[in-house]
Length: 227
Image (cartoon, rainbow, N blue to C red):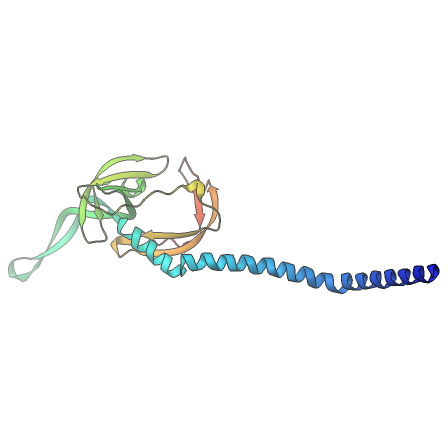
């Protein structure tokens, strides 16, 4: 009896071991696959919940544009220029005259940073200007006073006599990560605002702009329209 029982136990152990090997060989990849798939499905479901909270990306872009675009302005560098003009003279002849006036010599975009009329733009846009004119999205135009400028960062601050303006808020660039969405909103050449989308491609870019001392740029692939 003892010999038969030992033989039975040995047989059962061999069968169990064989089944374990078969299951491990054929079933383990399937188990790993199912576990991995379950983890991925869980991540996808969690992301789907977050996306539904955010809504459609187009809707997000539209809301950002509606919020920020009113703060974006067009800045014109006005210089005193003598230009030819014609008028009718005696005997209906055309007379050529020289007419002096303030004409745009350069344009760029800027944005309102304070509802009291403070605007940030690039220094090179307003450099050497006889006067500076700021055009707003709601149609108003005002001459601006140059508050100050910085050659090392190519920035300038203007002020216009206009209250109650929509202003944009500065973000924290340290919180920006590569891959984040970014919108570029400008006011090219006094036309309506243009909006382009992209992502942050890199941080801390330098040596990309000649004759600019301080450079620590965010690089994006959003198209930057002229002006």
